[in-house]
Amino acid sequence: MEQRNKNNGGGTAKKFLTGLLGGVVGGFLVIGGFYLANGSGLAPATSNNANSSSNTSDTKTTQVSNVKVDVDSDITKAVEKVQGAVVSVINLQRQQQSSSNPWGDMFGQSQDENTQGSSDSEDSDLVEASEGSGVIYKKDGKDAYVVTNNHVVEGSNGLEVVMKDGTKVKGELVGTDSVTDLAVIKISSDDVKDVATFGDSNALKVGEPAIAIGSPLGSQYANSVTSGIISSVNRPIADSSTGVNISAIQTDAAINPGNSGGPLVNVSGQVVGINSSKIATTQTESSNISVEGMGFAIPSNDVVKIINQLEKDGKVTRPALGINMVDLSSVTSQQQEQILGVPATVKSGVVITNVVTATPAEKAGLKQYDVITKVDDKEITSTTDLQSVLYTKNVGDSITVTYYRGDKEETAKVELTIDSTVLQQQNSNSNR
Image (cartoon, rainbow, N blue to C red):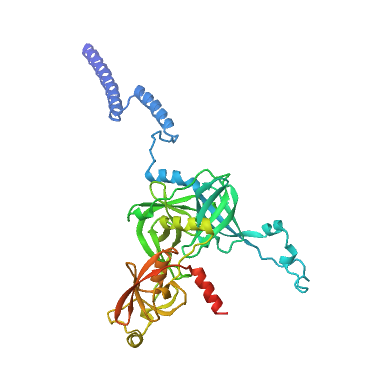
C-alpha cells in the first residue's frame, strides 16, 4: 500500500517536470516566432542598424551632379561674337545752378559769365541726363565709331561711352539724323577690342530668331540680352516729329528704355538693325490698352547708308522736289470736282498747292493743282508717303512722277538736283 503510494508520488513529480520543460520550450518557440515575424534576429539586427546609420550619414550632404550639359547654341554663339562691341551711351547735360553771388543778376552778371573761360568748370557742370545703348561698328587708326539713336544724344552738352568692361571714355558727336533717328559718336580706339559687323536686313525672314542687346534702364544693366523672333519686316512707323514713315523691323525681343541705339542681331552674330522704339500702350476711344512684344529697329541696310553720310558730312542730305502739298483726302468733294477736276475714281494722292521757282518740280513741268498718285512704282496716298519716298533718294537721282492734271493721267521725269536744306534756305529768305 505504501509502495503504491510511493510510486504514485514519483509519477506526479515526473509529470510536473515534463510540463515545466514543455512550457519553457514553448515560450522560446513563441519568442523566436515573434522575432522571425518582424524580420529580424538579435545578431542580424545589430548589423543592419549599423548599416542603416552609415547610409543615413552619407545622404545628409547635398552634392552637385557632375553631369556636364552642353549649353552652346546659335544664340550663345551669336552673343559671344557681338557683345564686346555693345556699349552704353551717357547723355551729359549742363546743370542749371543758381548764382552763388546774390547780386550777380542785379548787376547783369550771370552764372555763365562767372564760369566763362574755364573748361574744367564747364565739364564739372555736366551731369547725366539720360542713358542709352550703342554698338561699335568701325575701328580706324586712333578712332572708333559708335552708332546709336539720335534721341539718345539729343540735347547733350557732352557724351560718355561705357565699354563692356566698365571703362568710360569721352565721346565726340560726329553727326545726327532726326528723320531716321540715328547718330554717330567717335571715341578713342585704345580700349576697343571688338567691332560689330552688319548683316543684310533685306534677307531677313519673318519668324527667324532675333537677339537684342543693350542697357535697359541704364548701364547698371549693361549688355543685357533678350531674344525673340523677327515679327515683321518693312513695317511703316510714323515719326511724330517729322511726319515721315520709317520702314522698320518689328520684333518681339524685349526692348525697354535704355535699349535704344543697341543692336538687333541675327543668329550669325551680325547686326541687322538698330533698336529704336517700342509700343507699350495704344489708346482707343474708351481706354488705354497695354501692349507686349512690339519693338522696332532701323534696318541695317538703311543704317549703313546713313552712318556713311554722317561720317563724311556730319549730316544727311536729302533731295527736294520743290512743292507745297496737301492730302487729296483733306480736299472736299466739291473742291475736287470744281477746282481739281480729277476723276471720281481717284480717291487718294497728293495735291500740289504751290510750285517753288527754280526747283526740280518746276523744271519738270509740274503745276499747281496737279494730283500726284505715284512715284516710280510706289503708290502715293499721302504727303507722308511722298516724303518717305524722297528720303530714300539721293541728290542727282531721277524719279518718274505719275499725276492727274484735270481728268488726264500724265507722267513727268524729275531730276532731283537740290537738297532740302537749300529749299529751306530759299523759303527762309523769301519770308524775310
